Length: 120
Length: 307
Image (cartoon, rainbow over all chains, first blue to last red; front, side, top):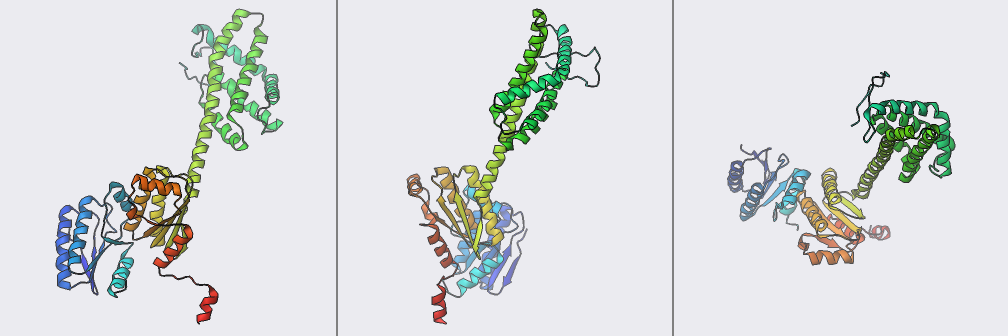
């Protein structure tokens, strides 16, 4: 299942649908870095609102995506992690360490715009 | 084994046995005789029982009329249980009685006390009635005692179970009350924790907080543990998890009010303190939160001076 990726000004927004298989995640990783390059994006938001479970493979892949996009000088923000999913993740010791997270799309965009202005 | 009987049928073919009773054949007859006697002497035995309750200074939370009313109900239930050999009605009555009297402050020893007094009052009346026929008295008592004991047990257990239910309910209510999630500024939540945190409460806390972060779209949370005396490794880890989970929802957590004991515990246990943002007290925590959110608080005089 392909994840829809939309362009919003200098940023890309990828909206994940409910159940992502491992292959879907690998495909997403390849697609994101390619899109960042071709669109010369300055930031990426990956919206996981619809994900009701986040396992260690998903978390690792998201970290890898963020690292790859960082090499292109852009930031990645993961948004929309549900309270139940967050709770399950910390209990299982699955962390999204080093990855920027925000509550939702609005917050994610606010962060990227803030970063873009060069204010720290 | 207690066999259930049809209440409607009062024929002589009805049989019933109680545990430890004498020869089966005679028991049913004896119990019927016993029940008949108890019904006949109802008025005087009830009064005697109510009198003895007052003498023993039990049920002081209730007035004389109330005691008599409840005594009547218990008496009738008692005789009914003896007659039918079934205890469901009695159990149900015991629970409903407990629901009524527990809020009045009636204690367990009072409930057990009054049931045992009734048992004594009825036994004495049996002694009085059958004093000339020792053999018969013995057989009547053989039939009466197991049933009376079971009744006392049923009532006492019903009362204690109701008390335990109330206590559990109150504990739950206290838990809810003690972990309010409060919004003090736009995007800023405070979670003041008071008392003992056990793993169950820690979990409830985390769930409440995460929901609060989402609902209020909070960016900063101040968790104040000034009111928490001590914390063990398990709870400390729960706190770290709460901080991490909050971060996944885009919120920064500041923990304030760590007591010297807790500070020592955390360091000794080796909790990953790098993941925790801590400030001395609640005031300091709120001030830092405001800075993070881009607020600056100035006295009104100073503010107007610059305009």
